[in-house]
Structure formats: structure tokens, C-alpha cells
Length: 228
Ligand SMILES: [Zn+2]
Image 1: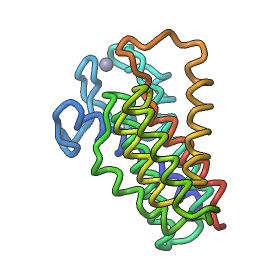
Image 2: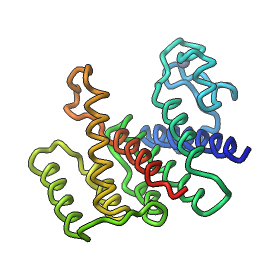
Image 3: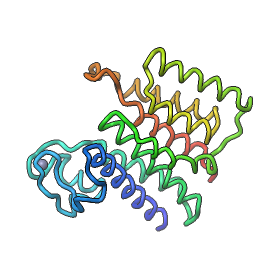
């Protein structure tokens, strides 16, 4: 029963994080208007349309009023966050609270990058429980971390294939988790990006959002390194 509670809580937190990210990007407050509306036809949504995952499925993935396709990003992030919360959280504890905070921050960071190609650095604060909950022993101490940071900085400054937001995110992971899990997150995110964009046309704005893949890869590493 507690597992189901954590799953539902994960979906609700992801739903709120995605909505807050979308509203902040358009200059609105995350809290108002109180009721959500369709971004296309501005029709206010009924409470059942706002239920995480179910609202999307019951509408067949389209706005009930104007038939505009709804972003798959929302139900997908809700399902993944709920699933991660279900697996990672067992008891009402500080560990579960920290895990939920990290997952919510990951969804928020991934959402702003997905919708607007930027991140709010303040949202990175939510990742710091990672250091307390999932830190692994990293061979070599701090030197490999410094080398990895220098390589990432090079990719930002010289090749411009990595954004400043991605570098900030990876630096927080280096500080919180150490170099070894961070390198695994980076590798997993690169593989995911290749798979996701394999058949995609080149981006119009010249940049592919990397944070959704980084966030998803961090979730996978959390599952792998889970103490339970
Ligand atoms: Zn609509």
C-alpha cells in the first residue's frame, strides 16, 4: 500500500514540476491560474483531465476541445518518476523524502530544457541529497573529477557541443556523487541521445536539449546505486 502511495506521489510531483517549469518559462506564476488550461485553445481543463497519466490516456493524447496533440513529455515524465519512486522508496523516512526531492528537481530541470532550452540554476540545489543518499566510493580521489570537469569545460568553450546548463548540472553531480557515477550518467545520457535522435531531423535552433537524457540517466544510476 505504501508503495502505491509513493508511486502516486511521484506522478503528482512530476506533474507539478512539469507544469511549474512550463508556466515559469512563459512568465506566469507556478501557482496561478489555479486551474490548468489548454495551451492551444485556452479552454480550462476539468479535474479529471489533470490526473497524472490517466488524464492523457482518457483524452487519447489529444485536447478534448481542440484536438491538438498533447505533449507526450508530461505522461512520460510522470510515469518514469512514479516508477522510480515506487522502486526507491520503501518507508516514510528522510531517505524517501530526499529521493523524491531529487526526482522532482530532475523533472523540473528536464522540463525547462525540453520546452525552453535553458535551466534554472537554483533548481540544482534539489540534487544535493544525492551526495548523502547515493554516494559511491570513487577510485583515484579528486584527480579524475578534475580531469572530467576540464574535459567538459573544453566541450562547452571550444566545441560548443555542451551547454552551460549541462555543465552546471554535471558539476553538481561531480560534487555530490563523485566522478565515477557522473561518468556513467554522462555515458548513459549520450547513448540515450543517440537512440532518441537517430531518425530525427537536424534541430532548427542548432541545439538538442540534453537535460532530459541527463535527468533520465541520473534516475537510472539512482536505481543501480540504491542501497535497498
Ligand atoms: Zn485545446
